[in-house]
Image 1 (cartoon, one colour):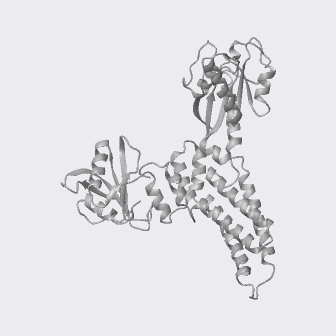
Image 2 (tube, rainbow, N blue to C red; image 1 turned 45 degrees about the vertical axis):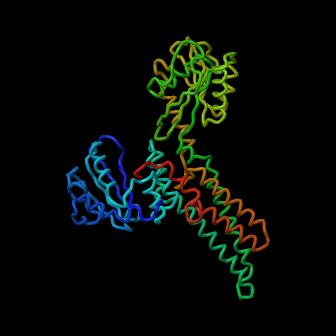
Image 3 (cartoon, one colour; image 1 turned 135 degrees about the horizontal axis):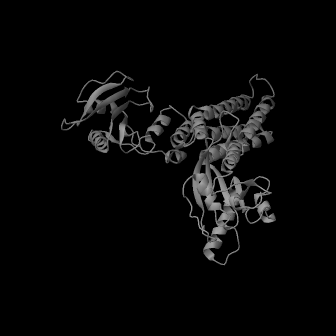
Length: 440
């Protein structure tokens, strides 16, 4: 990213809208704003000003709207920032972007570049930047709450508190190493070991979260399983309230995995329909069955169906497939002569029993994803950093040599610093910001 560049981009979603916002950030943001305001003085900072937008080359009026001016360092990026609030027609947006592009020293922003500059200028740490990305991508209320907590700095503050404790312990250890002839209190290493043990325990509790934060961010995986023609695809369509999967009386219609995204009580769920489980000489169907069984192994919840119109009692294979932690469903109650003995009774055709099944799935989703603390792990990057930190601390606690203990504590503090972006993170910046959209 060339130093001194002034960047601009559409900050709102593309397409027709009542209002579109263009953001400009960098050392020439003020000059760019003045140029599209026909050379007028910059407005009062952080106060909306009504103006006409003009082409800086030909002087043609392009639109009329509001401008906002945020001088550095009190802006989102920490640089001079200007915002143009114009009408959201595609032609208007294109004209304004072209006008900004004709100004010297201005270029179109790359994906995530505004947020990356905010990080590099100390306006947020890496966990907050990731929280912002998650907030933009959030589709459910629970995802929004988790992302908001992370963006507000809850996760970063927790890790920085631990890092501060490590740095304090390291200072005491290095004092004893570097100044052996000074009149320092004895037993500094013994005094710091309880601090390190406390941190190892706190990290263990933090890591022992059953991956709830990551699951909430990505969605809880639920899979529908059962023999052919028990109504798996019909149930998927009924729960999704649309024809997502093909339904046919012919056995083996579903050959591949069909997924739909659901919002159950504010929690994101990925519900998958699978091939009917049976032995088959058809290579395509056999591959579908293999994929179904593989997905069942890694899914967060198995929903196992059987046709209660054919048998009121589920067979041993079905009961084993559901196990103790799956949801057993007796489908086709509208065709059954007697009430089913096993499972939740439903009819995908009439909708009978579906509210009860949805309540059951919602409770399961909440159990899988609801967290108890103010800040939870949301990414594998965080988990790996904490595990590396723990490993270094455990090595240090097993040592008796002060210099070796100090080195392990130093490594542990560095692993924590990499999570928040305090130290040595150039190699992970592209990974963190690659999923951001242009204009953010």
